[in-house]
Image (cartoon, rainbow, N blue to C red):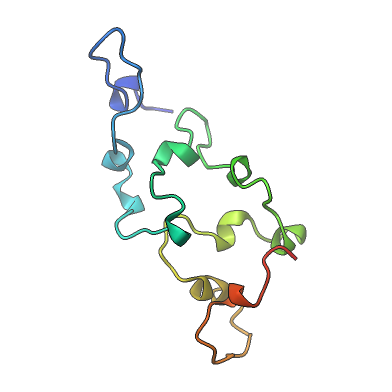
Length: 123
């Protein structure tokens, strides 16, 4: 971690709670382009970067199972994908588009719903 504490935290008062400054992550990580990102049913509308990413870890990538303990399901049992292979948190792609990125050989059903309406992700 080559970043100094004051790059993210404000130290203006002794009794300050040392929380990171608002939206400070995107000042350096603007390539994440969070503009237009939406989560299903607006579940994560109040989610900040640090709710999933721990900036104090060597590998600050999220462990989805901290909040989504029921994780796993059919696709992870085979060991060929991780949560973020299908659930892309920084993308506003529709579920159908996400599924079809790997399942291109599946025939078109001509039904205007997403794959999850009929296919279970949990087995």
